[in-house]
Amino acid sequence: MANKNAKGTQQQEKVIETVSKSEQFYNENKKLIWGCLIGIVVIGLAILGYRKFIYEPKAAEAAAQMFPAEASFMNGEFELALEGDGNNPGFKEIISDYGAKAGKAVYLYAGLSALNLQQYDDAIKYLKKYKGKDPIMKARALLALGDCYEGLDDYSSALSSWGKSVKVDDTMMFNASTLLKMGLLYEEMGQSDKALECYKKIEDKYPQSIEAYDIAKYITRIETAR
Image 1 (cartoon, rainbow, N blue to C red):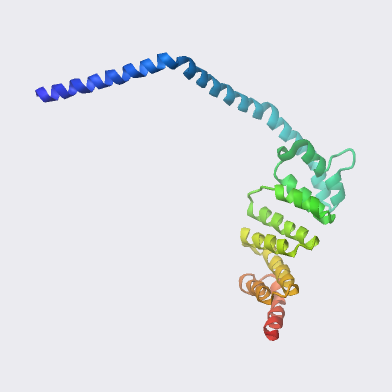
Image 2 (spheres, rainbow, N blue to C red; image 1 turned 90 degrees about the horizontal axis):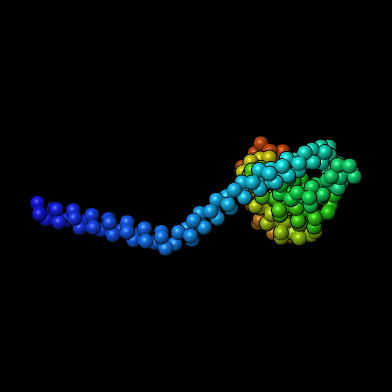
């Protein structure tokens, strides 16, 4: 019993000692502690205020500016979509004025518009800034990036970008046509083994695609030439 009382007393003394040290530390550093706390609160309020009163209104304004450019893009009027008409801004001006506040898709729209106008360097610049997470749209951006490199005769980069596109989204929407493009380019470069690999992927993975209907002749052509 005496041992239990002694242990209890020791524990109480340790608690009292710890509390005393904590109080001492607080008294010696309370200005610094409160300064840090106030600083954290001020920073938090500043971030909240910026988002509510600056970022969100700018984002809403940018979204409203996007409508005419998006309509032009959907109608295939790529120059009008990219450059605007003097009254309504195009994607280029929207990016300059708002940047990412206009949404991630603005870079994809701008890149695809520039690609269709054969402005490959500008298209690459925009497409590389697209950071969307949707796999279909991400694959579309990589596919377009590859098309830009092909337009610049940078075939190695084109094949690399197309290959990434196929891996990002494993659906028939773009992959069969992309693999066919890769195969044909590999053949032009004299890399028949890699071309055959692309053709067989179309045959095995996308047998319902349009590209698969004639893929046997591509395969036969390479295998016969061996």
